[in-house]
Image: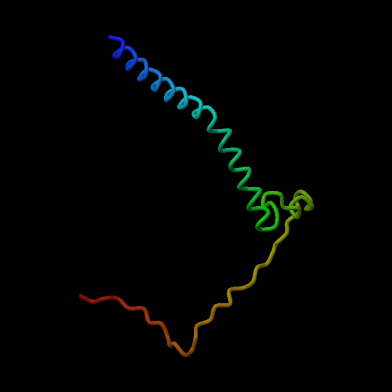
Length: 92
């Protein structure tokens, strides 16, 4: 009977460890994800030259002042060597 008792004791310990780790990870996951996101933000900030969420130009603008940043106009032109695009429909 001692073999059966030690077997049940081993199964019980395995189950307790499994559910214990499951509960610990459940409560530590938000902190772990926050830490990982913070580190990823630091690495991307270094790679691309700064933090995109701490833009210094937005802090220097006065409140209520409207500014318009003009982007380059769409300069796509068709290649004359290719020809003209013709839109068509299939007729059944």
